[in-house]
Image (cartoon, rainbow, N blue to C red):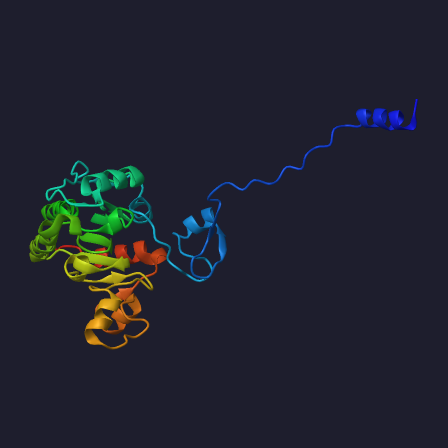
Length: 288
């Protein structure tokens, strides 16, 4: 036997070398803050209602997460789930409006840009509307207007306070005047609700702009906002070009609006449920 044969036999008898297994990290296990770049365990971030544990940045959340954060377990009763959008103007811009609606419905699991229903917040009844920015930028079309009106009318009939979580780019251009009509329609429903001396609280989140800001977002008895939310009507560049002057850096932020009297208080998301419950408790309708 040659020396080479002896080495060959020796290698055959050696146990196979185990390949080093790289540690696999499940997708979505960690989340990086878009502001401070801190990396957090997603479960911990969810437990803190998607507010960064390092810098306090409020990550955008969807309507299901909002409802879970605010409404007592097993008390949510949806309203208007069967209402679906149509394409009354046969709008088309590279892609038809009908096809866009189908794409967003498949992507988000929503019928349109708002969820409405009744439930309990710390045992107190409430009518809650939650806008969802994932669906066409939370834009306000006919379905959003109809669902919010039905929500407000239900609240008026049952003497419930109304809370609307606002998150929108404004009116939906694909529905033209029908979209703009929703501003007056919702405002009228809120007026009837307030005639019954019932409480309405809008919560302005990032972003709240356009026709939503110009209507029901600013009609509250008490107007709340999340920290550093963008709130305004026209865009910053449009205003600067119109006025031909530079605007302050914090212009159209919730902090700027608080300072100038447009909102009543800025509430961190982690305290919102407790504060809403306190306000609702203090403004219960007087029984006759």
